[in-house]
Image 1 (cartoon, rainbow, N blue to C red):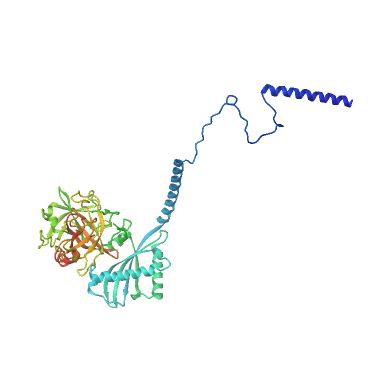
Image 2: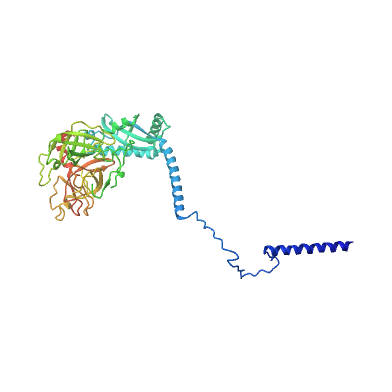
Length: 475
């Protein structure tokens, strides 16, 4: 019985195996599971048996174009993020202004302190401003101090009284009263612990909060101060480089005393400098052809068209001893029919004390709307250039101007040329920075062509004519 069953089972297995072989042959399949594999020689098949299937090549995602676009997107996102953070950080700060008044007991008042253009006032003011900077910048909150400007020095029986504007940046959430107390605390602590060059009488110290308009009005009593549109001082370092080989002025109000003198119907003729709210200083040769003030207008701002401010002329005063042939005494005054209001974009420049002497290679700036090539067109946008003073001895050398430079003239530029004033800049300012206060030291007068080697610009030396200016204007 057992044997019979086994025989039957074996017979069924053989039947199944036979059927499996028939299936394999029907589908062309072979069982190679038990066949040996030969490494090193691949099995070859014909294309007829196995036709080649072409697959589309997958484009690499990080090709150079996509990678560049992705990088730019990341940079843009980072920039926007930084901008947002900066916006909130910067906007969180606010400008605060204070009028400070105090007595100094170890200095006696001098009469020249009453003249803000005098050397005595300038030097003493700078000493006081430097002392204030030292007090606040070395304090724990020193980063909040921006600038100080002395407004007035007046006599006092115990020495001298100082009036000055102090500028700070603090969080907008702080109140002016809170900040005032912080400032007083810093000052009083300094008076106790630091050796200061000037002795401040502590009980005399007062600090009054003022708004930006009051601050600007107080600073208007000082000449030569440049301010940005946000009522922050513009440092001299902002003006690093018409004007031939110069550059366009970067900011509105960078040179707020610059004037364009224009003949009605003929356009820009010369530059000029604002020295008070009614008087302009320029070159005499600008009025060679036309001295009728009714034919002239003066405009202010960094562009001729459109001007920021425009005024008519009411009077023209040419120096009595102006000599066209030698260019001596090339100086003139023009009076506006209507005074201008001082602002961040219209401001007067300081006139230097007659005793000021600039050594050779002193950095000075010339500005104007003149051509940027010899005999070229007027520029609508104000240009500026840094030049250096050149001694009269050098300028009078035979290979330079061969003795034509007189005591009333000042040379400035570079002996190799390249940077210079040119046609249309005549009458404009040559200015010098003294601790962020700007002084008019020269008036664009003459020169041989423009920017030639060994032919620097020649300017009217303003210090030589201080008495003449004062006699005509009272300034």
